[in-house]
Image 1 (cartoon, one colour):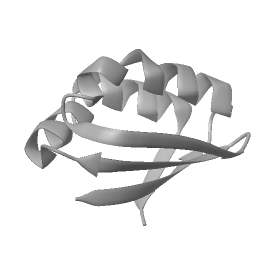
Image 2 (tube, rainbow, N blue to C red):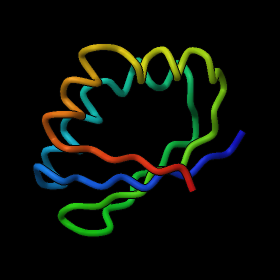
Image 3 (tube, rainbow, N blue to C red):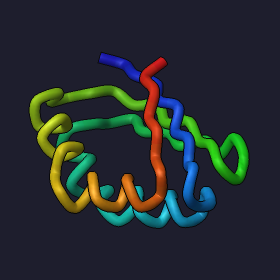
Length: 80
């Protein structure tokens, strides 16, 4: 399944979000492939990817460590 997500960073900058996002890349790549990150502005990004395991990706995305950092950065993710 091919997905595109719009990322809005309300409490930080793109570089902070990117560093966080890359910090769990190896875990994410267990569930997605063909991931492409595009910087739209200092407060927005777009990520496209193919999902290999939606249940695993959902579980990873719901982890307390990831949710805590997303809350800190004010991340709003919209699937397009």
